[in-house]
Every structure is written in C-alpha cells, then in structure tokens.
Image (tube, rainbow, N blue to C red):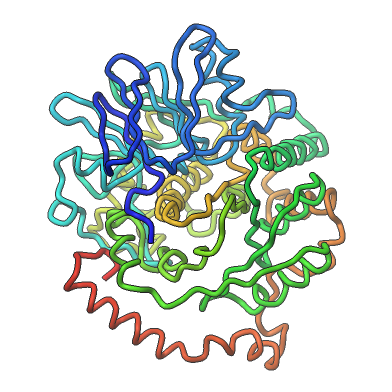
Length: 497
C-alpha cells in the first residue's frame, strides 16, 4: 500500500518533508523544492545560469524542437516561458522565482501565503497544513457528487479559505503572487487550411508518442469503445510504438466497452488485458481521503478505491483533454456570453443542477471575474470553462488522487500548441468527434471498421448478459460498500463517507 502524498511536491522558502525520505533542493536564494522521491524530476541550467526544475513528465510535441530540459538549457531566462506551449503531458516547471503549470494545469498547483511566506504544492492536504488549515474543521462542507451538480471544487478556489489553485491562464510568482499567462495558444495557427491543420495535429501527436519510449518504461493504453482512446491506438500504430492494451472492467461500463476493445486489439495483432478491480477496502478509503483532502467525489475516486490500475507499471496514456474539442457545449449552450459574473455563475450552477446558495456558485463567480479581467480572444468562454473548470478543476483532482497508483498517467494531447491547432477547426468540423475519425483514417483506417460507442441494445439480450453477468450481484456490492463507509467513520473523517 503506498503512502499519502505520493509523487507530490512543495515549493517554498525553506525545506519541507512530508516524509523523512523526501528530497529537498535549493533552486535559488529563498526558493526550495521539496518532493517525494517517486515524483519524476529533472533539472537544467539555462543559457544565463538560471536553475530550473521540471516536475512530472513533459514531452516536446514539435518534431523539430529538442526535448524540454535540453530546450531550457539552450534558452535565455526570458525565453523559457515561450517554449512551454510545445510541451505535452502533466508537469510543472519551477524556476526564475515562478511556477508554471502545464497547458491545462493537470498537475495542480495550490498556493498560499502564510506569515508573509508564499508556498506552492501539488497536494491540497500539504498546502492546507502549511496554511494552518485543519483538514476537517476548516474545509468547505459542500459534498461532491459523481455526475450530479458541480462535482469538483471550482478553481481558483480550493476547499480551504486560505488556499488558492492556479488556473491554466495563470502562473505563480513566488514574490508577488498570481500573474496572467496568456496566450497559451498560437494565433498563427489560425491561418491554416483544414488539411494542413490536420496534418500538423497528427505530426505533433505522433511525435509525442514516438518520444515516450525514450523513458524506458512499458506504455499502456486504456482502450474503450470510444473515439479518443481509439485515436491514440491508431497513432501508436502509425508511430510504431509498442503499446500494451487494457480495459478497466467496472460496474458502470457499457456492453460496447466490454466487447469492442478485445476485437480492436485482435485487429491490430496486440494482446489485450481486462482488469477488474476489487471491492473498496477501508485502508484505500482512508488513504484517498488523506491524500486528496476531499477534492474528489466518491464516484470519481472509484477507479483508485477498487484498485483498477493496481497491477500496472510504467506509463499509461489516453485521450484526456480531447473533450475540449467536441464542439458541443451541452448544458452551457444557452449561455452564449458572460454577463455580470455573479449572475452568470448562478446560471452555470443552475444548468448543472447545483442547489441555490451553493459555495460552488461563489467559486465560479471568482473564476468569471478573472476571465473578464484577463480575456482570451482565441477561446469561446465555454471552451475556457472546459479548460479551466472541468479539466483544471475536476480532471486534475482525479489525476492527483491517481498519483497513488504505481502507473504514471500521461495525457498525450495536453499541449498548448496542439490546442491552438484543434481549436482552429470550424465548430461543425468538431461535432461528432469528426476530427478523431479523420486522424484514425489517416493513421490506421482499419480501425474504422468497428462502430464507436454503440448502445447496449445493439448487442441483444445474449450480448448484454454475457458482458455484464459478472456484475449481477451488485446489490451485495452496494451493501458491502455501505458497510465499509460505516466502518470508516470510526477510523477517520472521510469525504467519501
């Protein structure tokens, strides 16, 4: 069983050790990096002698540019921020007295100022401790529900009043505080034809995938019946990447997710593994609660609680961040522009089914005030909502919890320049995952022989029973889960209770 705060970091004016074996490095006068020894870290000195630390895993998406640390070493200090939009992955860069998040802040950066000292951390629990906040008594009591209401803590807030969280459009200056970080995208990409744009998207994605084997670890791809993971599979084939395929067998998955991944694997001549988790154990519940400090709902925590990736080692890739480019605003469709931040926040909360007076509404108003003060002309505000709320808020919190697993997750499409390209397509070109299908047609057209996310009824009664018969005793599972939650209340104060 791993420890809490696995793969987490703290940046501040002095060393900090969550555990005795944490590493502490002085980056400059008054700036210390402290981190779990299992967090991937790299260091570089730029052309002017400034020291930088890269936390997490970043891969350059431009085939003509060097890998991140080599690029930093060749750059002047003032030039380093301009090279970051080319980096894919989940990472943070610390140097020159600032913290820069990845394109969608998937590696979260929480921050606080305490006694005149500024601290930053990927861990909400550790930063709360540094801010003098009690994890139980000082936390926002709003419960997070899976697929109901706003199931995350909207950035730039956290659950703790003295702790904030960086948005993708922000960087943290360790001397003066939060500063804007636009543009993340490149306006020059807006002048390309459809075919040129698609070719550049494919080339950058293939470059990232082709460079991943340099890290010497097995590469896993979680395969479903949907578009995004199949796009990654097609691009892996085109890039010649040796990838291992798996599918998480979960109670809420569709028949198609049971049936199609093995068929896709067979078509590619690859092995496929179905991984079924176990019933949540009390020790996993306790560890998840301590590690995430209540920033993840019980339903979103379930893949970790059931140990669905517990047997994997290496790097796990997927189609995270592709959802931004769906062209479908769903619940936000009627809200075409931001008006008064407080009124717009109430409209968003209502659209998501959040109850009146929810603290999520006030948090969204904070975000909207930042958006109004720091507009981004190349983003529809609803695209920005997906970027800075559903990705940097909801998805990033899940990724922080999944740091407890041995396998390291890597979002291939999470790079600013890739987003420039994808957001430049016309809205009607994005609907229905058309871009993903075009990429598959270019890279591995044989994968288009299989349907995408067909409904359960397409498989008939026999297919439905065959695919889901393992999960029929779900009543017993729910009873066991309730019993574990009752046990847990006597052991710890869990946000999953």
